[in-house]
Length: 358
Picture 1 (tube, rainbow, N blue to C red):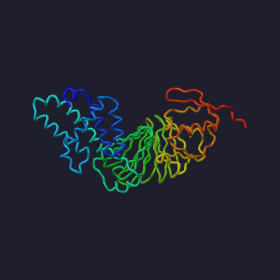
Picture 2: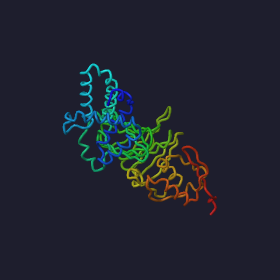
Picture 3: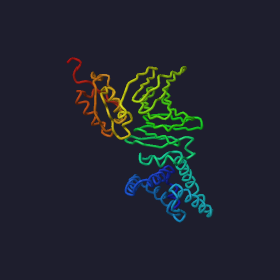
Picture 4: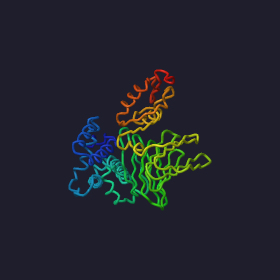
């Protein structure tokens, strides 16, 4: 690649190409080839950036010992690439800027890779618990997109599951284990550690647990739902001036805390709580209004039920998260609902007829 062409590659494309190579190392060969080819097909610049990133790895293949990861090989390759550029003064100024950007991108990626925990299957958890990384004691952020559920094993052996479109921040110190739910829903299986409480924060709600399994769902900016699968959880609602601790939640109990400080306690089976980790939504005599709200994260838009007369009718059934649109269609047909209006990011439903008279 000539120097003029190299300088035309945007640094962000180079970083994206390297990130894709890092992810591809954990994929099967066919999937990796498919994703790389699709990325290259976006533009000539994308293809050039991928070629540059691949060359960075393959040009110094002799440096890659069998046990080195792709990230380590990229680091060694960049170090040698810079050394070669500096050996030739006439070329140094041409290459140094783009190489510096590549090194910065790789450093960010590798630093993130150290702090973030990799997704694992349930069968891998037992083996991972024996490998604790001190770097994870500081801070890590996890995100999911639409259609994605992640499982992570935290530094203390606790397990974390993230639902679709969720983001949490984990911060461990010698005194406490703190998790902040910025968006969406998370399920926790907490490892016992009497010296360090496990505290989860969402909006103005704190859920504190020791050796238990529970779910925290940030429904909107102010509303939080805490549900317990096993053990007990102390829930604290913190307003601008006061901290209000409610009676601890026990197994199969659910607490809905609203922004005005009001709370509502109910019960739900263990099978229902957190079933989304298996791509399943279970409803056992749940109100239609609650079911429609539960579907919202998987529909990608808000459902307004103000004009639905049968919101309190009970629903039982098993549905798949990735087929939420079909589930909504079935519910609309069963309860005689229709779309009243639709806007960007929301849909208003109404009852076709007045079913209050039987």
